[in-house]
Length: 418
Length: 81
Image (cartoon, rainbow over all chains, first blue to last red; front, side, top):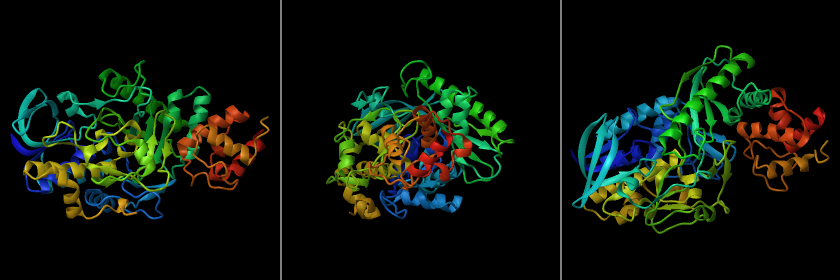
């Protein structure tokens, strides 16, 4: 197969990249390892869109134009749920079942050719473009592409190319989350009371220590809640490594074990939970941080704190740095002056050049900045920028003009207006 | 018994333990939930209160009325000491 743009990874960034590229008119293929798009928001059951809205506002105002607002609108129409304020930030509750269908509609309407159940296993330069090798259950397919977007979340393209990338040391990596669905819960969900019951259960020896990383939120559907369990990532007995299948196996197994024990405990102890049961497991645990690209610019946490702006900004930072370095809940750090930083196009541009762009949680940044830019709302924005850049590169237009082309297509970035 | 079980002591404890990010002069009647405390932070809080004050808060005390401000949290702990 020959395409103009090949997008690797169909999570929030890859979805936005592929749809944006396809709307420019070229042929676009999207490789996805599951049978659904949406990544963390579907396969890992992460049920809030964080990073859609501007920081420090009294009302939920979209931070970035184009795709983030389009997906926000589609989700609100399906769910009927408005943005909610959680502490100092606005989030949009989202249902993974709805997000799957929104992604289906977006790729179908825009003409993206999806390659499901497939992984990228090889990539090399071919003329001015790229030759990719995909595999679906042992069946190989070669794809020639003029431009390439790495939205794999794990900088898979960087690893296959031997390009510069970085994986934080195990002790600093953001901890993974294991999210599962529970049905049959009656009445209002009292998260504080349930939290206290779990702490009491651990204190009395009825629950494992790891249960203290668990909290529940209502899904917005009757009787349904989501449990989110932050784990240490060290369940295999060694340091956390999100690219090590042994580590991931231990993490998945431990997640299910703790989820089942806590659900059984609450069935006995908690009012309204007598008929509760686990109704769905994630297709995979939610990895928050993995390999990152080191590109032409490396966006830093210091820049986020200082509200740095760049000549080539393509999106506004739209979430605080949310550190999850322990499984005991988040630590949020907001920009010092309240002014948010911009995300420069150079952080979406690997040094290898040649029509290769990166988007989503593996774009070029340091560990601290990744704690902010990894969220789905921001990934929609960086994906959109990478998709437009790739479409332009494939059409022989100067990718360096992408920031101006984005502004022309979608308007100014509200988050950078101040 | 911890002598610092007043609102100032609670603010210091929440800051030191990183339960919720607060300025040092956070008011005794300030809303801890508006400041960012969530259900996971409350789980940590219960563990920390037990360590600092020897009081094991239970589900009955896990309410905004009992924990929602430094002053109310201090009163809840004192009532159990």
